[in-house]
Length: 247
Image (cartoon, rainbow, N blue to C red; front, side, top):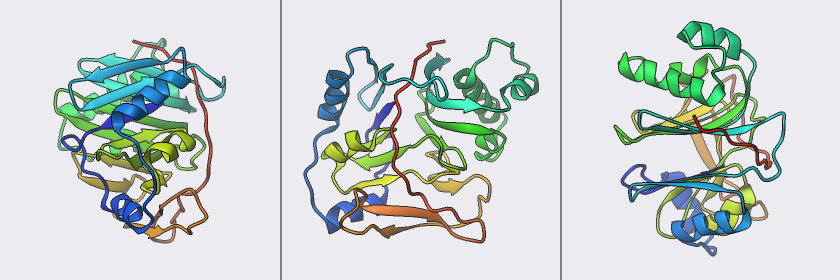
């Protein structure tokens, strides 16, 4: 799973910019990153959305426990990896048919709250239970929405390419080669929305999220964590590639 976004969609996080400046290391461009993903995954599916967004998905090394899927509906594009424990009850809540899978449900949840604004953005993910990470892009509003589950069972990473694009992927090694030390694990139990303009914890939206420099020997340039009594550090290294469905 790979999503690449230009600065016109999302400004590079200051914490990752600073991490790259502290420890300069080789990077490649966003175009080269997309090509590297495609070249290393023969069955990869790639979508170029205008000049500013690239999404890609592969079946390689797929897991039946954390399937990967892609759906597009009404200019809303979503990459989803994982499984929802409460999918059945969410289908009922949103009035969706039993054939609705996780990726379509996330799109419907996002669309329902977007159209009923000003609902808080954390409502999109606050009621999701299970193992998941997703990257959603609404082309009609140029809104990016990214989230990870509360335990971090499905890993997600983000970094900055040589030409200043922000990239998200479930493969830390892929981003390491593209983003150098401008790289971090996306904090579990958190979401980023360009509509909100910052990273937030969806269980405790008012809790501050901070980043600290990572030790030189680690792959990361920074580590994010949620402050407060329920703080969870965004650490861990994992990698999965899963199946795709297009709706």
